[in-house]
Structure formats: C-alpha cells, structure tokens
Length: 327
Image 1 (tube, helix red, strand yellow):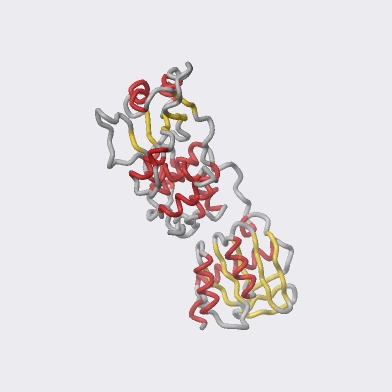
Image 2: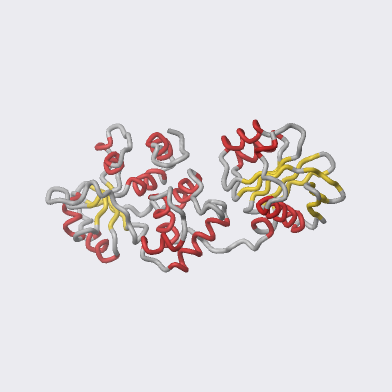
C-alpha cells in the first residue's frame, strides 16, 4: 500500500530525492530524479521513498510488512542499525543512512557503498566523549522526552551554548540524535555513552561512607552503587552485599578523601573522582545526619552499572530505565 511512502511532488519528497541523488553523486554516479523515478547509471527506476529519523528494527519490519512487493524502496534515516540493515537487505530494500552509507538494490542498479561523510557532507571531527560530552549526554538521558538542543541543555549543565552545540552536532553526525526531531536515539545513545563511561581508578578506603562524606564536605560524595540503584527502582538481589561505591565531586574533595587511605585496615568502601562536574542526583533521598551523602540519579547509577560488561547490561535491561531496552 503506497500510503507508507512519502507523497511525490511534496517538499519533503523533493528533499529526500535530492539527498539520495547527492549521495549517489558523491560516489561518482551520475544520477537524477525525474517523473517520480530515480535515474542513475543509465537505469530508470520508480523508487518509493520512506523517511524515518531513527527507526528500530521493529519499525522497519512493520514498514516492510506494509509495503508493496516488487517496487524498489529506499529508507532515508539519520541512523539505521546493523540489525535494521540486515532486515532491509533481506527484504530487498535500500537505504540512505545519513551517517554515510547508501544502498539501492534493484534489477539494473545494485549499489551498496559507504558515502564520503554523512550523505556526502563533511563529517564533523572531534571526540564527543569529553567531560562536556558526557555531561551533555547525561542531561539528555535524564530527560529523554525533551529535545536535545544546545539552548535547552547548556543552562542545565552550566556550559556554553556553543560548546554544547558542537557536542550535539557530533552526536547527530553519528545518528545518535535526530537531525530533524532533535530527539535521542534510544537505547543506542545510552549504550554508546556507557561504553565510554570511565570506571577505572577506584580507590579502596578503610573508612565507612559517613566518614568519607564528612571528610569531603557537604555535597561532595554521591553514592552510585547497587544499593543506590535500587533506590532508583533497580531490582538487584542482595544489593547490600556489593561494595559501597561513591563518586567524589571536585579535585580538592577527592584529595581529602584519598588521605583516608593507607594502613592495614580492610576496605569498607570504594571511591572514585566523579567523571563529570555536573552531577544529577536522586532528589527523593537528600542527605541527613545519619546518611550525609547524596544518592546518584538513577541514570547515573545505570551508566556505572552498564560499564561493567560482566553483569551490568543484564541489570540495566531488567531495570527498564532506558527507553527502548528490553524490559
């Protein structure tokens, strides 16, 4: 049923057609779009164009089920995952992944190739996983239903609009934030940042967490262990039996805390300097006289857990905190 396609002779259709032609042109293939048909390398093909910002494999499976047989189809998207590509390939469909890959597959024209830059544009360089990058993504993940724009995120994390804009542009170039929707691609964005979330350098201390928090000063110690995750809704059996872990925010506070180490005493908690300066916390559990520490926001706890490949993914997926992950 043709209703799944973008309507011909509309601005959206013309823009998608131009993107497809530009991608083929970047490969040195003479191409154009004439009378609702793609003309490329001497072949003329009626092509159905579909547009989805960042479709999941389930979305693509439904599109294939709803689409007509026998008509070449190209799905234009900011990002198409490998499972999604495999599904389209099996259906005989093509795609234009704006990160830099095009496939048009039909009798007389078979193209499956990387494109220089995302759809022929110059790819943005740089590493998005700096401290500012991690803070930006963390702010996006804590409010995934809001647009990932620099003007919204920058005031939240206390960074300049220009710096945050560069981070988001790099994420968009990777297809992790929709260029048109400004929405994060989930769960892919979460797992990508989890792969870059620092989790080394934990320091064992013989002091308990209350003593650590007192030494560091108010607002400097954030608990991020399994117990903290359960306070945010995670289901972890025997969470209390795992080591107490906490981030220490600030260079000076971390130096004070490290001074509690040494000696022959058994480690009572593990601390690490916080990987970011802006740090969301779980507002439902503020510090008090008995527990003078902060509790990390559930998303922070999820990222720390996910950094452990042995069991973290299973815990996070069963938690259901990341939209799009398996429940």
